[in-house]
Image (cartoon, rainbow, N blue to C red):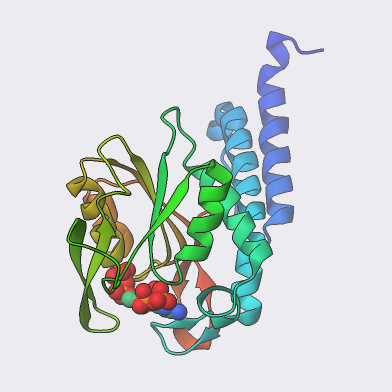
Length: 253
Ligand code: G4P
């Protein structure tokens, strides 16, 4: 039975149990606690539970990156075997579910927008999960497209080329709340171009979901500075020494 007198003890138990459970599941976590922090026991316990769930959900993606990703240089990761050339459909479905969870809001998303080609698979599963349509921006205007289009110039620092991306005005309107999804975030230019297109249409960008973020490049900050919510399923801190290191968001001091 819980009495008021027992509360500090319960906080302590929750706090320690939380840290223990969390530590067991996350061997890389380093944990230090002070007695003055104990009143925050419940809060920390539930925060940790949420974090454990999040980590668990994208475990499959991290495992694929670690087992099948090839580090080509300090700046480039090859993931052709499950994302950029051959596609893992189970993983893609999980990504869609995770994006929908992370961007859940009272105002429903009405469209998903991505850019051809590798963004299409995770954007498709996200749209399927949301029950809305997916639009993909074209990098080259198709034969059947007329001039009734929105365009944005996207410079790629990686490829050192500019693409004028195009979306038909028929598919994004001012009543749309649009979730943008892409496979990689490096410098943020593709996502910014997609957001510009939504804004030209008078629609609202509800957020930007990324499968693999290279956190050592400026893309995330560029998008945050522009005022967008950004969620990445895997965040890579470094590709140095031929090794993938993920951003550790879980260290408590
Ligand atoms: P940015 O949009 O964030 O500014 O990225 P950037 O222009 O630098 O990247 C251009 C292209 O290179 C994009 O693909 C992007 O997905 C890809 N890219 C960037 N860094 C990496 C990396 O480390 N690994 C892999 N595999 N791709 C990377 P794209 O030209 O649009 O190709 P696709 O979507 O047709 O496959």
